[in-house]
Image (cartoon, rainbow over all chains, first blue to last red; front, side):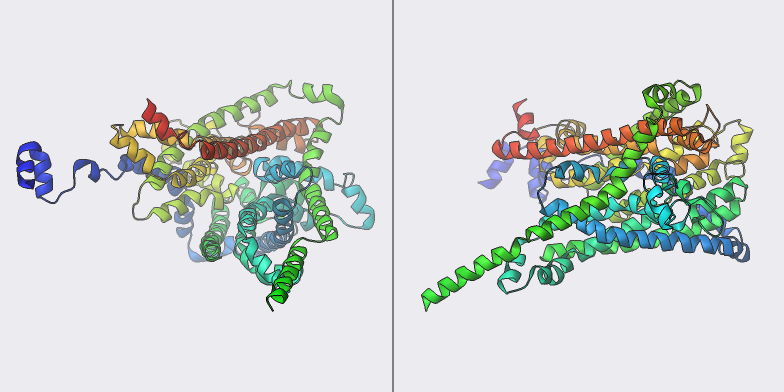
Length: 299
Length: 306
């Protein structure tokens, strides 16, 4: 019967497909079209805009010779800039981890008037141009500014000191911590907290032993993102830092200074060190995010 | 026995509920502390921009824009964003179609490469273009021979801006397309649609809010970029100064009111971006609710009705 049907009612092509065990045409089109075109365009554009320009820094520094590279990338002035950049970025990211967790918790768990407006404004550092943030912070913390006129009599100087750089990096990094934590706090299973409370745990013990371990991967991811952004930050820092060599001169500024003096080798050497640090952080962030996803998946 | 268990359980459920609700004092202290932190680090700088801009009154604020250099900076910023944003939008659509709708080896690696500009200091983003196109760069001699200037000119500013805003649209579109799945497009294909029709009539309507949000973010960064543009621009007044660079020049000349007036314009752009983001979130949430109520309101059903 089947053979009859095949012979009489199906087209030659369709018969060949059934006979050869091949799937009918519409079944073979499980894959959407356009992959070669879109992937080809994407990779070409990526190579021209990102990869080719980026390779110049590495090729240029490879042509420098080891001694020249070390001299340019690790001179005392540059070392002081690295120490300042990484140290202040680390301190700012730590402060953001603490207060970012608090802000994320308050915005997700508590209801209060104006909550949605404040939640929307947390993204301000993403949207506000860094130069605008830079001059605004300088105006606030200068000796005659809103905060400066309070702090100056107390002997606390913020503008044109490392403290000022820290303030700028806290501003820039905050949304990274808050926005990484918020979805995880939202997804927390209420039953876990109920179970802990039923077993007699206090609120604080529940937070420390149940909630915090669940939030830790996301908190570390947010911290690493804020730190990574902090070490490369330029616009918001240059205005408030005062740019004194060896004291308040950050590494990205040193790259610009070298370029302005046509010292391309010096600028490139520092850039390569900073790029390698960024790539290591990017790798760490990817691993943290994988860990974070696994942790949430299990809970 | 069972009576005891019942009352015992009832008691612990009550105490559990009490333990779960934070004491009003803790809650109030947390809220006050969080708001104080946000006020100090976020709201104060925003308020300072407008307060400084209007320090000498509305008239001075408005007249600071009546300056050829300031107007040129605004025009240049619009031009740069007008080229960089469409380029990165087309790339974002291509990349998300390839990555979210298909499987191929090396997909995760490609995703990491797309994210690269986010991880790189803006200053380095500018530097690499100087190394490529500058007078001493790889293509410098060839460009000089053909009398093409890229660095310290508008093309360099556009290229640096394209680099720093590269991932924004793709980054918003990829998760949105992945969440949508391929079923609706495959159904459209079996109904006889071409690949392009499936993309335009099914995929695009499904991800339109993610696309819009990506474009808005990309535009905000394109107009506000400072570090990368500052390295390649050369700061030629009335020629290669974008709005953020104009802010810097005016500020360094102690022309604070004009600097903050231009900064206020950029801050308004940032606030508009945040407003657009909130609007999109609100639209998406209400759309999700509507779709739950009316299950046949999906783009696929609309397509079937055509």
